[in-house]
Amino acid sequence: MKRIAYLILGMLLVSSSVLWITACADEDETTGGITITVVDRYGVPIVGEAVYLAKSIGALSDGNYYGIYYTDAEGKVKIVELPPHYYWYDTEHYDIYGAAQVHAGIMTFVTLYVVE
Image (cartoon, rainbow, N blue to C red; front, side):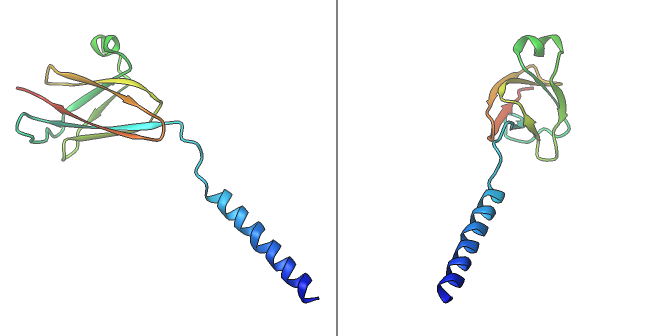
């Protein structure tokens, strides 16, 4: 009788472990993100600057933006849940741009140095 009790207890522990592990598993990531830091030539953050994000250089030039974001007190814009793609970015007051590729499940970090 003890053998059956130990067998049932063991089966319960194994099955609950399997259920717990599958419940904790992350789902496949389908989006990524990008953090753009805008600084001047001395490394000082540019606060409150509009950052334009587009899916191509042509769209950026034509003003067909994916989104417009504003830098925070650290000169950063954090954009999450972006579909994987190659994104171009620009600022409102400076004639300089950059580009970065966003991958699923990864946060990409870039710095845009602006010159006055």
